[in-house]
Image (cartoon, rainbow, N blue to C red; front, side):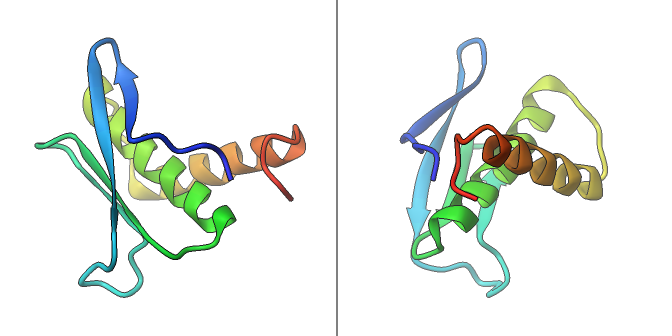
Length: 95
């Protein structure tokens, strides 16, 4: 798993706080990015690999919000998959 800090810098002086939660109302949900309060919520107890995937996904949403990037959710999912593959291919994340 990549090292996930308590804050992640998205742009200039814009940071999102990373908060670990015990559960979400939706049992399929592993993470959530909240634009208004600049928070990324991650579900505790996921595998290291899945936590990294969810974190990357939520960071992409934060970038989308702060950089004014408009993209369908499917594109966020595709970018998440591409970045995870890049990390694995370069040994920055276990395969």
